[in-house]
Length: 266
Length: 278
Ligand SMILES: Nc1ncnc2c1ncn2[C@@H]1O[C@H](COP(=O)(O)OP(=O)(O)OP(=O)(O)O)[C@@H](O)[C@H]1O
Ligand SMILES: [Mg+2]
Image (cartoon, rainbow over all chains, first blue to last red; front, side, top):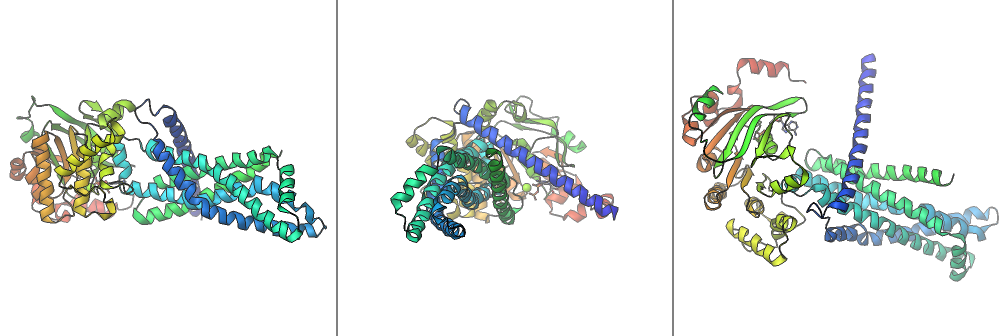
């Protein structure tokens, strides 16, 4: 019995140590990426704009259809729920306040983050994991091409640029989706809806959302890269770590979101 | 080991330039010691084949030479420099003087053949696009891959992948070329062509070449000298004839493809049976 307990404690201890090691690895990757971006050209290893651009297309442009579709749906969902709840107090007309603020501060960044974690975070983990087991990462290393500079930094920059851009887009589409339902249901004109939105939403709210989305982009990239780098044992290993990266990235996003909301509303 | 000393040292070419110097190298994976203090030299312009049974530590040795695995003690000097003991810029410079053809090719799956071969040029030179393409195509000609510029790695056969990997490894005209199992998994004709290619690279370009293989035939064909690895020890380093003539039982077992079980001595056998867990 005590044997079991000590065994489990040991397992827990090991898991904790591994967790700390992964966080440390993430920090190292981040610092190295920043260093490469700043002094890469001086060391003869510049971070290539073409690769950053390629990543931006992959993270951002290719994700527009899915982000748009989900955003319209969620915007309408928010409007439906908002009107239904406020009807209890006979305050349907106030729905714009609730929708406007919650979209810009919460739903825009959160939904974009989760979508990108599932879409791009997973493919990043799979790509790096596959490259690792095919010895492509070793090949970069022995060619004198730093894998962090070559693989991680462009992905990170692409993510830090495109996740906020997508979030802005998601905000916009969600508000339009919500506005469409509100104008049909409550008979408010689109113009009046937009007018009240501009009154309610202040720059701070938008920046709050965008600030979070930058953090989400950072989390998704680091979680994806770390899990890719930890892949062992063939294609099955890649699958396992890809799944793990999605679960971890989404968890990290939600927890960070909560902490961010808590701190900034104090 | 004693035999290795007997055969190797008296006539060791002290006047030839040493391109790789391995001294008292010990490598661990976790707590397990894989290489037990091995020492070795590779001379300029020679092909050295590292040979040994499965699990003898060939890949580990190669990865340590390449700086992919850090030794616990001892050192590897490539062209006089220790990869693990120089700064980033010097390491990048040194790595431009070495080429590696990995066992599986390790071509970048997202780039076509030409882009793969051009990558080292792109990363390390300031040549314009056309010049880089010409240089890459010249190497493709050397490995008999002309005209396959636009194919993606997934569209290549095993032999073509190996040849593309060779082209990429030599595109910077390295001083030292490393190949991991160049002919493994290929049919005899293609395998023999790869062997010829290795011989050509040594003769025409004067490269020093380190080849890891367990294929005896190929080893005897391409090697100037053979280093026989066994369970993390170097049994001997010598010319093909010296290795063939060796009276060492383990070497003869390896040459005659006797199975691992027969090679094990009773103590080792018992130890394996009883100490299977940690
Ligand atoms: N990543 C690793 N982690 C732990 N142990 C390893 C690792 N790689 C190899 N080993 C162990 O090191 C020993 C030597 O392995 P190595 O791959 O160097 O052998 P090899 O001579 O290349 O064999 P093969 O001809 O089968 O490729 C083996 O016993 C193996 O179990
Ligand atoms: Mg091997």
